[in-house]
Amino acid sequence: MTAVATALRELWGLFVEDASLTLGILVCVVIAAWALPALGLREAWRGPVLFVLLAIVLSENVRRSARR
Image (tube, rainbow, N blue to C red; front, side, top):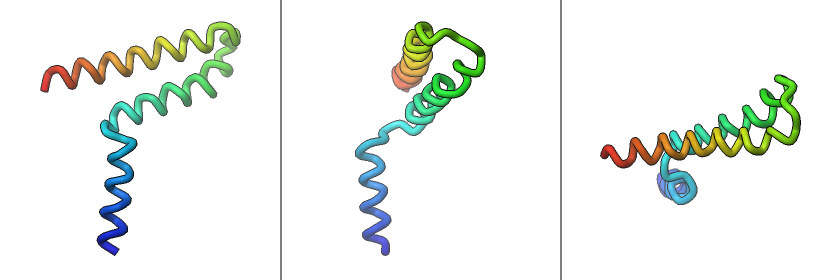
């Protein structure tokens, strides 16, 4: 059982290096999928808003990584 848990942790680490970045991206996708249509934002603006949200998350992650 320990080998399976270790393998799953390694697999998780292969795809998710920084959990805070992953969570930030997921939150942005949820906002783009549910919150923006609920706010009545036109479809033409949803892509750019998602891009800006993702850029903010990425820049915050890079800033925190540079401090270390």
